[in-house]
Image (cartoon, rainbow, N blue to C red; front, side, top):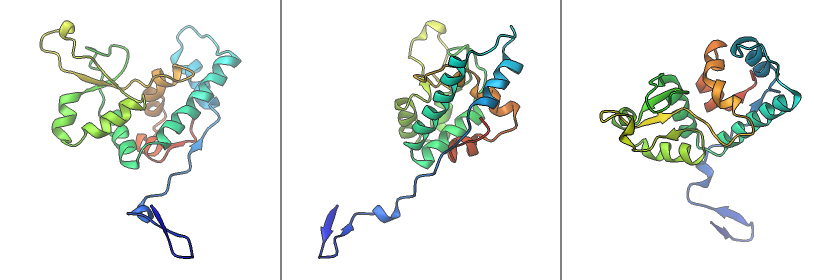
Length: 178
């Protein structure tokens, strides 16, 4: 970047072409917490006020991480959620997608995968073949490092059960239904 002339106009290589950051729309976490208790907790336990606050913080943390990513990376993450399966080889407690299938379908996907992994929004399994000689590496749809693990554990199921759109939630950073 450089400043030119007396007008102090900033000249930059392509800066004016950058897309504007979206303004996140975030819910208060109440609907998500109510759904956890009503639908997913088989033991009818209630969430404590502290757990509810932690879920709210996790939703805010999630939107903050998404905001730091380029739009195309957010849309890539939404696509991973849409194509994820319960493979249950390397990630028995969460959904995943085969890394090789993603790289064959999207040859330039490694940069998006690296950004998402660095942002702790996905997990790439180790190359440990102890789970079987023929098992492929997987991309686990496991977010980690949040105040509450409940968002990571139930995010996919909440979105699907409420008929919400991964592309709207992740791509547009619209967590208003949470």
